[in-house]
Length: 254
Image (cartoon, rainbow, N blue to C red; front, side, top):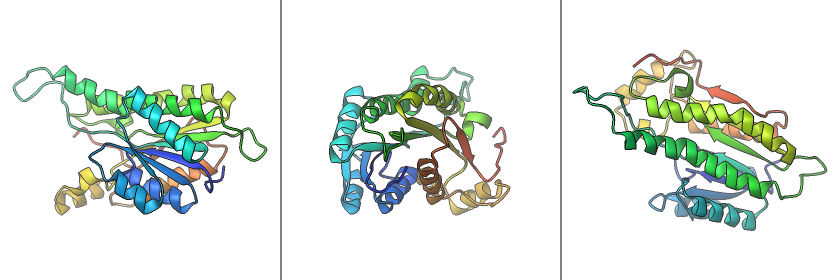
């Protein structure tokens, strides 16, 4: 599938991995729709890219349905990238041995997993009605974002790991289901990346995290994530797969 001329919707597209993806797809000729929170820089980024910004919560069916409809109206929707997510720590027991606040666990899973499903569900319903591309049976591709925490989560990450593990686990069944509509589904599982959250740490802490990566011994770059998104879009035989993007790191318990 070619990127040029296609409609692309990116959640969490106002910062970090989503922003790098929005810029790369725009550079490739896509008409970009950024979906992010009202408090984000989404409007400014969309203006910079000549695209569209829709303020929406990924867990809201109505808001995401509207965002997808606006993206489709701007250009036939073919590419969806789910980058919205949160990663607060949430242990099972606190320092005093008290059980976790269940609402904290639910919020992480709701945004990271249920929000991802909501977006891919609403978007696939629209993509499936588009005409196939260029004489093929391809209609579109959806790229989700998991994490290496899905496979080797650390202490303090049960909710985050569960949410990202769920994104990984649903990749294959969703890809199998949507195959009859000509929609491919893949997931990227990033390692330690230069996201706004990590870039807020002291430089010494960033360097320490980077040194844990076997090779190259540094934090991953958002543009490396976006480059993989581009390859997934353009490589028509990639489907139903979760790809680790992590410099071969395997996370320690803490």
